[in-house]
Each structure stands twice: as C-alpha cells, then as structure tokens.
Image 1 (tube, helix red, strand yellow):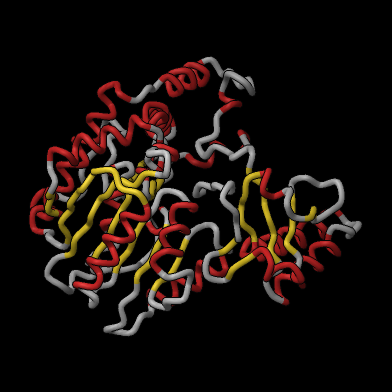
Image 2 (cartoon, helix red, strand yellow; image 1 turned 90 degrees about the vertical axis):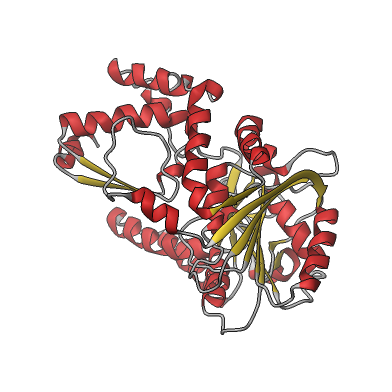
Length: 393
C-alpha cells in the first residue's frame, strides 16, 4: 500500500460526517491531516452539521455563517432528564400521542434491545400498522425497504418510527417530532435533522429523555460510557429549551468541554509518537491502530430469507470450488456484495445458536430457508430472548 501512497499528492480530500471520528483520536487525526497538507500539498474540506473541534487550523468557507444559523428556526430542543423506565416512557408517549394523533414521531434508542422493547409495547407486538421499526437487527435489504416506504409516504399519512442510531446520518426522513434517548450531543443534533427537515411547518420539537433499564442504569452509558453522557447532561440541564439558532453555540460548548481534558487523548499521543518513529509494531505501534474498531466478538450471520438469498448462497458454494484463482476471487467478490444484503452482525455466543455455513468454519453462520420463520421476523429482525443484548454497529 505504501507504493500507492504518493498518488494522494495535491488531492482534495472531502471529510463527510467527520463528527463520527472517535473523540479519543481527535489529536491524532489533526496531526495526520496537517502532515498531508504540509508534505503532500493536499486540501481538506470538512462537511458536517456539528463542526467538531478536531482541527486547529481551519477556514470557514461560508462568509457570515453565523447569520445563516441565526435565521434557522425549524426545531426546538427540550430535555427532561429525570430517569424513566421503558414502560414509563411508553405510557407517557401513548397519552401524549392520544392528544396529538395527527403528528408523526421518531423515537431514537441507544440499544437494539431497548428499541425492540419500546416497539413491542407501543405497537402491541406489531399489530398496529402505523408503527415501524428500524435497526441493524433487520437485514439490510429490509432496512432499505423501510426507509423507502417512509421517504415515499403520501401526504397526511402519519407514522411512528422506533429506531436506533442508524437514522442519524445518510437518510432523508422528516418527522413532526423527534424523541431521542440521551446520547452524545452531536448525535442528538444529528437526530434533530430528522425533525421538520423540509421546514414546511412552523416548528418541530426534539425531546431528549433519559431511559434506564430495570437496574436503573442508563442505556446511553452502556454504549457511550459515562464521561460523554455526563458532559451532554450538564449542558442540557442548564438549558432545558434550546431553539435551533442556538445549536451551533451549544455544540461548540460541548466540544470545548471535551477538549478541556475530560476525555483522555493518550491513545492519540501514543500513536503520534509511533508515527514519528515509524514504529509499525502490531501491539503498541501504528500496526495496532484501526479508526473503526473491529468488534472481535461479533460474527456474520447469513439469513436465507427468500429464494434469491438461497440462490446466492448456492452460487457462493460453487464459486469457492473454482480452480482458477483470479476467476474464483472475482466471482466471490461479486456474490459477497449481494450477500451483504442478507447478512447481519451478531455476538459470537449468539451466532453459535445457528448452524455453521461450512463445517469447521466459526466465522460464518447461517439461518437456512427452512428455519427463517423460526428465527427471523420481517418487522423486527432477528428473534431474541432476554439474555440477547446487542448494540448497534
């Protein structure tokens, strides 16, 4: 790969949704990007709604951008951070919805188990058609169908979507009201972008709540840890009502608080030194780095949901036996791309409940077509029991 590295010279590099970079790597990314501009004469363009303070030297391309922010007034952010159980939340939501049945709603959860519990209670286990569900517990092919259905809703038809963080970026959805379980502030602002998105009504409410499990532990802390959540909570407690034209100021306070030393940058510091010393050690040097951390205990599970999915797996098995190396590689690459539409990632202990796709292979499991009805639900995805907790990836 180093042989190809020189071609990046004088490139224009677009960084879209840059806020998705883990905070502990801000210092490292700032250092690496600066070197690309200094040594390789690259130009970097950032595109993001939340403008994280990753880079020490930036130029705002939009003149008088504060004036634009001051005139945007699509949504208002409210927060009620008293602890509430899923059952209490569902009861309150049901009563509020009865008072305003004409509204569409998006409820964003932090874990799949939490989202399923809310969906099952509110929709009476899928019996109410106006409730839709979306998370990585569904096959990608079914997630695409749900998104297409929601994007093409006829005027006047109101839906309630219970989802996880998969709606935070890259989807064009528009709801009258958004309810977000507390999370990182930039994630909350991303969710706000799904409320009154078309700006065709006067104002939409974005409500932040604090849901806890039966042990009183917040679902947010399970995913993001306590430090980031506490920073978000401290900011929102001070301002229980924030109009959209103040979002930019709020998010800058959030990032400033993070970079004040509350989040350790030791990982960045160690990797910066490894870069300077050309230390490619797999345990302590650059060789240990992955911006997107692999989920070591997660394994691919293929679901033969329909005839097409079953035929893809048959083609995959035949392609593995092609003798010519290049032909085999090309065939497998094309088939794998299609198979991803029927593949979800699950914890290893869960994957072992199903059959191995190939005997002796512990990295690839399958639900055969005959077992789909037993293990998979079209509306909510993979069926699970109480000890099956899974986060969103």
